Amino acid sequence: MPFWVELKVTKISQVIVSPHQVAWHTSYWARGGLSFFLVKSPVQGHLTLICGKNAIDLAQKPLSEVQGSSFTDHASLWDGIYATVCGHYREVVEKL
Image 1 (cartoon, one colour):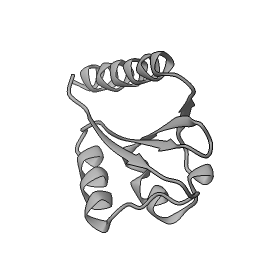
Image 2 (cartoon, rainbow, N blue to C red):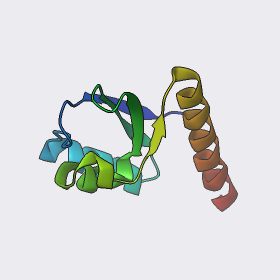
Image 3 (cartoon, rainbow, N blue to C red):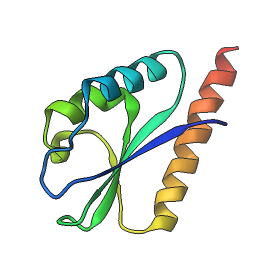
């Protein structure tokens, strides 16, 4: 079950995402692929996992306004990724 995770760190409320990154994540997601941005904000003290389909929002809005899931530790992060990946591919298989 392949998926991509792009790592980002921000000290402000905005995450810097290039137009190329937005295009890649949006296109990959539209074709059934699974990608994420994993954002660490030292100010907020947690990790935020954002689906690639929300790349445009991430590039244009403050992090607090982008749909994603927040995690305070690595174990809960991996549980969240696992659930999302399994759910995504379960839907793909059901459509076959």
